[in-house]
Image 1: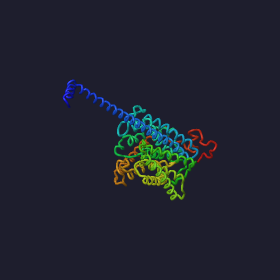
Image 2: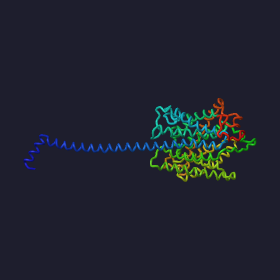
Image 3: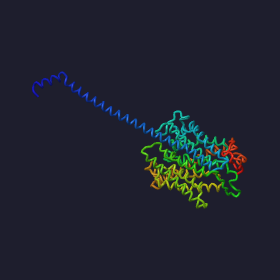
Image 4: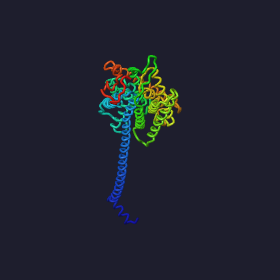
Length: 465
């Protein structure tokens, strides 16, 4: 640098001009860089927000679709139960199925959701009555989550209708239906799905073998024992008389509807879509268990009684569905087949067992839902895998008896609570409004006695059977 240039440079330093230019250039560059970064970050944030909202929307749509399928199962229950009982009581059983969901919806809205998912103790929730201040239990809107859970609540309540069919007063049934939906079912749900004491122990019931089916099945057993058998079901020597249902086609339609609805019941319990792998595993396990249950039940009854009875095969499919409901997310498909097959054997043997003890269950609700709800819950501890989301590996995967023990503790606690609570409830109902219709009304049919109408007007050909 020559002397002149040096003089000018020093002059600018003295005046501060060069420093200001340097600073100005730097500020401009930094400002531009910051604006560019902010634009990029803003775009990224905006895209993330859109993506998150879209994911929530997809998950919400999936859960609502599943809720609609579970609601459709009410029609399936109605068709099965109507087909397996006599024509003179069809209107009565369908009215019970219809009002079940009505009572469950109102009871679960006022009390049930708060008890099941509200903040509280390990025994029950204490906040969110009438859904005021309630929070969603999943990453979907509250109302979508509520509808899905309400559909489950209705399913638990309607199971009991079949076991107590053809002899229970309609008024008594409405009282029971509201109480179990508003209080008893939600307490069990809180223990397992609402952050209660069983969930903290690692108890696993993915879609409700215990929460829904064991609760409904053992409530039905309790009520069936208290009601006593239908007129003409058992002889003095203890042998049973077959009282055939009036429409096997109707029952068959009901089973297919239930099987279809179970694809909402089990896969919908994922509560999100994700990459689809969990939904797919749950769906294939659900289907395979139902198929295996139907086949094995048919083979079992064929071997025992010499005929491949369709009604028992259909109950076998339902038994497989009930059994796979708890472990469907935690097992491989081969295990789903075994779980369903064992369920098919249990339902046949369970019906025979109850008949020998003069427990009159017209549709097999206790064997299908109660016994197989227990089996499916225990199966989690045998076939379940920690890598698939379970707290501990099952017995067959080196986990020992840890998960089996947790499952046993949970299902025994639930069954005990249901038996005691429902026993008290049925006793109170029996001592007030009464549980059972009169002998004359039973022989004539509950359609006429309770509702003043016939299901098949002009086609009724008997009144005393």
